[in-house]
Image (cartoon, rainbow, N blue to C red; front, side, top):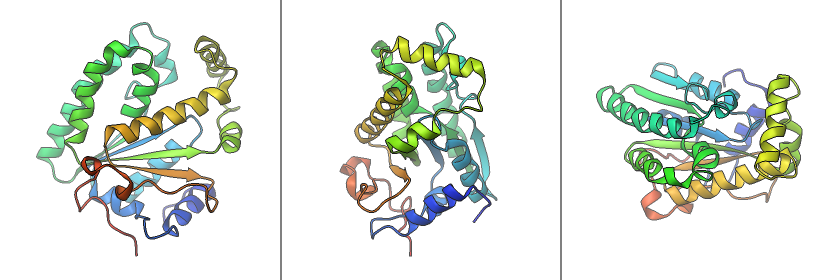
Length: 242
């Protein structure tokens, strides 16, 4: 296993020990062509992206940070950014489709994409939903797998504060909490996480929920058996772990 923080190693080990509905993260990473990591602030997206990139050695990896995909909090403050983001994504998914069709060794690794856009943009500007649906339709035509990193409320409060981040980030969080009508940051993150999972269920794009920390009985893994028929990936996307 690549060198990653202990909590991520435990998370991955626990996932492999789950019941017969458990699937290998490594197999999914190797068999998919577009991997998207979603989750609220502090859920471990950057670390998990590094882990997946290590798994993909030998492939032609097109990896993108959240900033490169117009998902950064710094960009969120720019007037007109939401419409620009959706327009950018329409062009980007067509670019992805073209590369994947021409290079069988290519794989895209994206830190936040369509689910984060739904929460940050479409919920607030529903007039952009038609363009957003075009993006979803292209994603459905590709061998995509989405990893949703989920925190429980206790861990969410502890990990999402980011005391190491700049004063500007802290100020932005307070402003957006007030603007969106939440009591505090925790309530906002709870809402974001719920919306991400609800959108994933509706959109019928293959996904897995990775819960941290894991405790017996805290919920079943979302796999192909739990998805509507149209959302199930082709047989070579999921492989049962031994």
